[in-house]
Image (cartoon, rainbow, N blue to C red; front, side, top):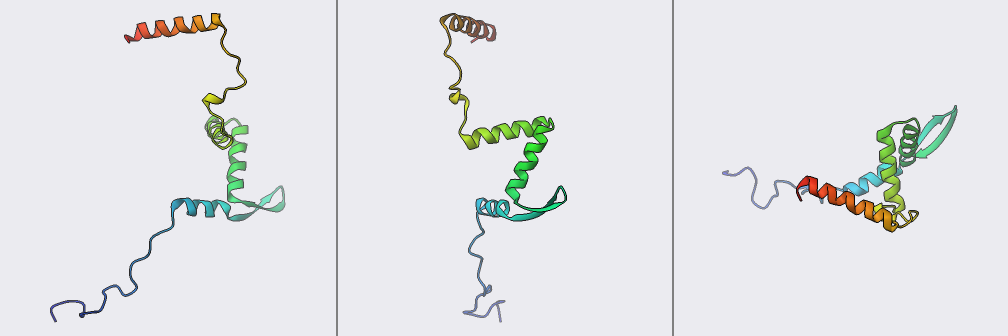
Length: 113
């Protein structure tokens, strides 16, 4: 025989896999998994997502600046708050606008623009 495989017989009878699951699906499943934890001596059940959020908030509350930044970024993304959503700020007065324009002009002059 001049070949490893017989004629008409596949070298891989089970075939190739149809493809993996998307990362988004795997992540959603892992975050939705239920976990039992001991909290103050009581057994409680939470999703992993909830536990991650509790840990992030706790670390931020203890003064962890990295956790605080991530929490703020996440909150802005979840609640749709962005730099253009500064609705609680008053418009600039004409005097404020003049000061700002003079500052921008000095900055541009100093940088050679």
